[in-house]
Amino acid sequence: MTRSDYPIIFIISEINALFILLLFFTLRAEMPGVHSTLVGGQWGIFILSPVVHFLFLGFFSRWSSLVQFAKFCVISFSNLVIDFGILNLLIYYSGVAEGVLYSVFKAASFILANVNGYAWNKFWTFRSREVEGWMNQLIRFFAVVGVGLVINVTVASYVVAEFGGSGGSISSTLWANIGAAVSLIFTLFWNFFGLKYLVFEKRP
Image (cartoon, rainbow, N blue to C red; front, side, top):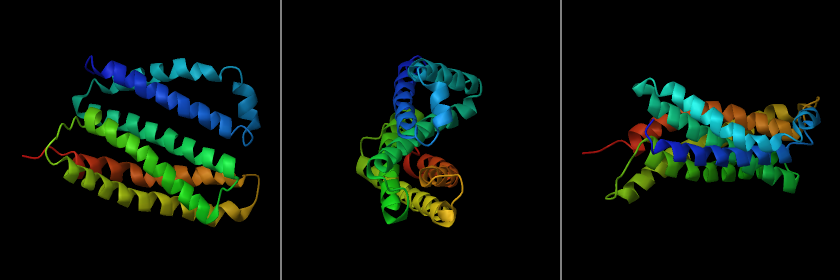
């Protein structure tokens, strides 16, 4: 890691802590046992988050070939908590966790999270300083994210539609989050290689 990485990591870690706290708030009714265990200490996330982020990147900085992917993982985690935070906020205030409106919520949260990811990945992960042709780069970004969006929303909606209505002890809100989590597995590597080789690749 370089000296300029430290303030960036701190800012990202605090953003992540904020959205984790938002998740803690919106899902408290779904996980009362976890809530009662953590209540009172949840604000410590703002201290713990930078420590975890620094340790994670410090560990991978020993291998230069993995630093870029480690940074991408940090931004992907940031996208994840922003995605889940916005999704659960929309579910919390609307009371809707399935159907067409859930797909709309998932699309909105995915897009907003990836707008966040674009800025961090461009200037920090892949250090792309393109000025000329930035519009072309932005178009390529939205093309890659568009494919990722289709994969993400399709998988999440399928999981919720196929398994979420089966009843049992798992609520529809938790199924909505399980669907979102499964969809991330399918989009993580697509996003990394798509952004690296199709969007932020240094061109002659």
